Image 1 (cartoon, rainbow, N blue to C red):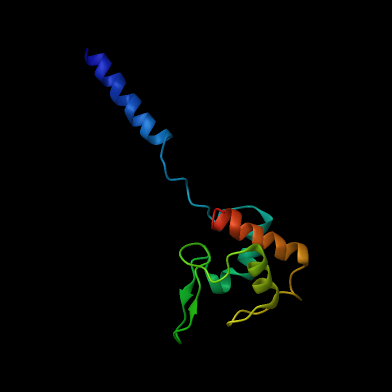
Image 2: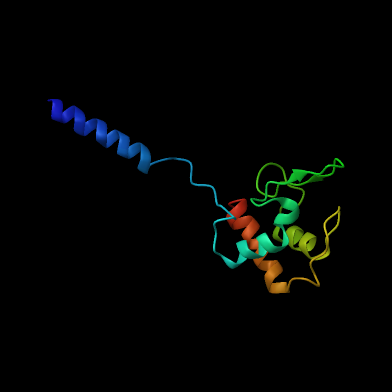
Length: 115
């Protein structure tokens, strides 16, 4: 009987580990993808190393592009904002290729926002 309880307890503990309902959060800093590298090189300086935004010393707010409400939600809106900038963001049309800008849009939606 004692062996049964030990086995059952071990099974429940293992099940809790295996069936964790919350998936691990994507880490930009530890990712080796090209998109994460582009983010680190071009976006992290303002949006932060994990895309969570920040408040500047002068009170301006750099948006969190991972969590919460977003001003730009569709692929087209995000692409346009990356390409043309605005609201304090520099345009990347002459810095990143069209393919790179599209890759960043997919990165934001797929890896950062999980859409």
